[in-house]
Image (cartoon, rainbow, N blue to C red; front, top):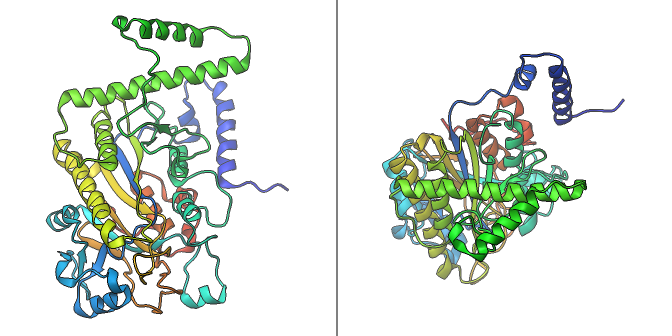
Length: 459
């Protein structure tokens, strides 16, 4: 007897419902399968990926005397002096005080002056809870190819564990809600940093654009005054709208038509947001600021595009700090802090929808506590930040580890075992986004291995 998994069951059930629908006038497909009603509200997730592996134990640092002394001993020439840290004041005081890297003033002010920022400590890909003894004894399932850039990026973006998966957890969310958002004028998933595993899906297709919006078709124009470019546009339109006998020609023409139509729709939405003057926040210069500025404009045009759910992917690089860490890290973290703070200001202050948009970070992995003399090497667990009006903010979630070489979480060379899984992190965000608890195992395949399915950092 062939076994069928949950995804196959849902697809088979959907096909059966569609067949029944043909013989049942007056019922919609959504009514037949009991799902698919529009959400009736708007929510967006914005993933900020830091390629290279962010040294996040220099981003969020223990400020208490004893814990900072352990940190400084481990980090050696990479340690940030206690007096230089930007103090943060959580709502729930703990036994350890914390501070942020001195370049992260934007997020420090946002953390201390609102309830819209939370840090999640020592997060990383895990298949099941893992202790140091289990790691050393190889008595626990571990993600493959730990400490490898490509593999650990893929683990964060797909949550695949040891299985083979061509989809990412944002792509799986889009698949789960595709019927609910059938009226949207733009794909649920949109990337401003190229194709990515995070948004890959079985049934839905992400929309890929540049940092300022869709790439324009430079060889043609819809402006009658554009001369040759206008003539070329007309000619190309006749080619792709022609009736072809070959299924391959028709398929190619349909792809080209969709590309043009999508580019025009999205570009018009961005232009409408710019013309409205709704966003007055000034974003920092550079790639990440430009991407987030464009995301803010698309969110501003959510009604025009009839959007109910959106997931955006933006990214920046340079975090592979084997060398020159003390010189490079301040600029990298300032860019993250200032760009996210500006984006939140645009969403909260300009658009007034802070509760509807949540921004979160991811990165390949954390980095070693030990210094290699001029930087750090590949490690495992690290800290992430979550920002938005729906965040239970001014708090730290998870278990911040003792930053001690050969300490209880160090598996060698200052590489810390995560105490919170990336699946738990993703499931918490997915639940807020509107994914039912029963489907969280589709988004985060290993969530059932962990006691907490919801880390509590979202309202």
